[in-house]
Length: 129
Image (cartoon, rainbow, N blue to C red; front, top):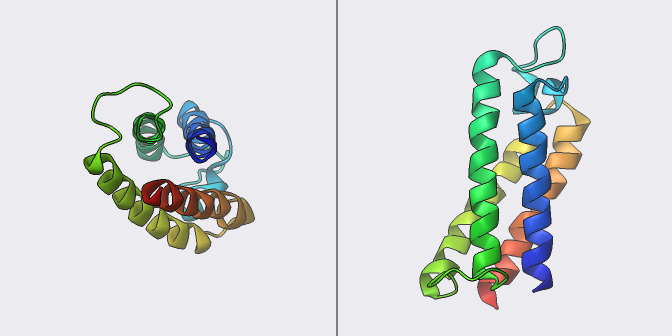
């Protein structure tokens, strides 16, 4: 239960960060490798759209994770197909961790990289329980 709650909270935080980027928060240097930052610190319009889409995806992933963890009732989520989905997410967040490690901004390298690394471990533990 703790694994699912912790992973859900981390995914919600990541979704919130992406939502704020999409809304125009001036933190673009800490996202997308710093390549999408405009002079005012906000994301370029195409990247703001990407962040909005990422927000939706992260919320969906969060719902899936808490469902597989048994924290919300979703028929079939805790079956073997849910576990396989967790392994797909382990791979996704593992690759994302590597990408964050190459970011120019320390917040992306250590902040986002730390979050995705922790998510990778939490999801792997959840998948094996």
